[in-house]
Length: 610
Image (cartoon, rainbow, N blue to C red; front, side, top):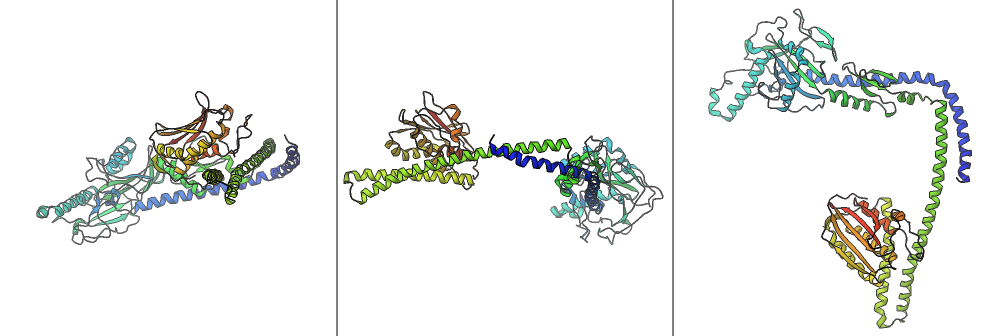
């Protein structure tokens, strides 16, 4: 460890420990009072959550309470239509519920008949939601609720049978069907029942029969008592039939209440008319309510540091504060963990824990500082090597260009040699451009300013064209190119692939000069992957260096290769461009001696901007 790091430990660590000891002594005196304040704050937080939860449930209850009895039928009479003859429409409940907490709507008629607004016929269930409701509401858990519809109920004034809830619904269904038939078959309209038949007028009375407690509800409707008074009555929004006369019907509505039946959560009411009573209910998704909706409310109404979790009653979670999540729903509680209390109260940890944490922090700071210093030194050395290498690589082509230009300017080049001078200047310009482009490309990739412009094409044709363009340069270095490129359709950025191929060829030229002077390029496909390989007969790459060569500024140091110039960017760019395509790059030995550099690219994966 460096001397500076040791000084950091002594200079920063010791004062930090002394200050922490003083802080801990002072904090201990305040911990108990702050804990009481924190508990009160968490209690208020729970009250806020409970008010929001109960408020939302009350909104749901009032929304359902405002619905007319006939919306639970397949067809209903819209409240804003005055004419009775064609004032029927499909119930707004017939579509899938917009509230994710609602599974569906149902009505239990006397005799245990289950009806839903999803289909007119209760005996044949084709709608999937009607099937689900029939299966769940028809279970044993709902026996008591079905009995509410079976009960004779309180004495009611004599009324025609067709004024019972079930009969009114059947009448509306029949009128709706005959109206539809009359619209499609005008010649039979005179024979239909709807002509002389008028829908009865209805009015609404809001009543409360005996209220008790059970299950999820603080108020639960039970069977009406003989002396049950009408608490409140108001007129329905349903249109009045002036010609109905004695055919008018009065419908009594109890308020909707929440209740639990087995594992099911239900919002229901009783509706009564003509001596008959039905149960209208909303089946709620208990998992949605307790496991998803309730936690989402908690998340919106609390901050992360003091956020409680929603647990079931009896769950053995460790809680600093445990309280009901709702005054309406039972079965769920808010559990504030000890960490929430500590976050509010600022309770200090134990002395041993604090000292341990401080020691770990000081030690970690020392290690991080030492590593950062070493990394800074390494980067400084790499930067120096990079600047030296770039300067050398820039100087060589610039010197050649300047010398050739001066000789041409002074007329010291014969006509026979002018062509060679021009070729040399072009090659050095290309070399200079390649070096500058590598540096710029590395900067763009590092800063995230290098978007890949992918297009569909033949990777084999692209590589063949790039190899043909590089062949003259390689010939001046004494190398030949052998291309084995199949036809591989893939998505790729042509400019990026060109940089990959050029850098791989440049690497082979630098390090394979002592071996066979043939460089092989292969393009093949391996399932959903396009494979590009460049093979040479150079000394290869030691196994311990095969990953390092793809790091920026890293160069393999081998005896006899000190004269080989380079910036250490070429293979790093190869891997980064391959990864930008969603692929990879690796180095391996070539069979028979030499090096294989392989780039693998997905053929069909869409490209993202780097």
